[in-house]
Length: 97
Image (cartoon, rainbow, N blue to C red; front, side, top):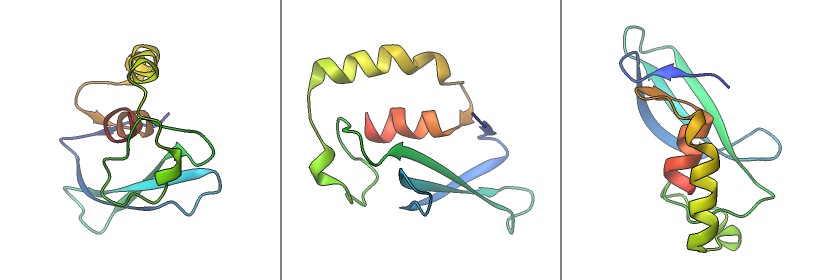
């Protein structure tokens, strides 16, 4: 998994992912070189999630809203989240779960 420092990159927006099997892409901009953008694809388009907070809501049929499943996901994936960094796991953790 790739990690991008929040001090080096600024979050711009979400888009529908162009990568097969992924839901969304988070677009980041390099703070020192604004013309350098990064796409982080996240979310499996074939699996359910707790709730979509991206604002795009392209997969409403995949929301389950089950609090127990949410807690289990967060416990399993907290180890992949690094303070001060963006990653696919970070976006899934914060925007889908």
